Image (tube, rainbow, N blue to C red; front, side, top):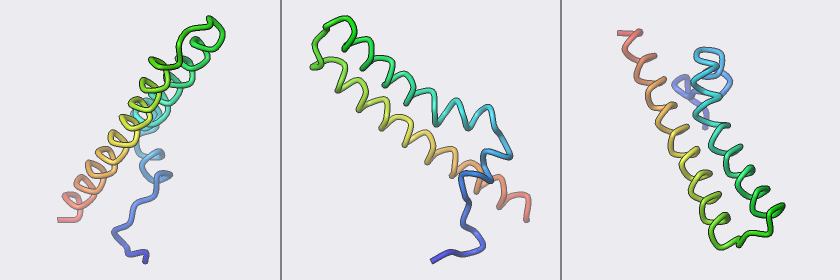
Length: 79
């Protein structure tokens, strides 16, 4: 159920595009680069797959934190 306090990623991206891109997309790109590096250099996936999983989880947690910061700033402006 949507309320007026719900914030979309597009709202945050419009507000802080560079920070949002760095937080959300760079860890995912690093994960993909590590997986590609492991594939093309015939390295073990036992290292690269956990690294990719941790980077994806890291991006998710940072994005959630960024949402919380944005909501707090928005709430403080309304006061």
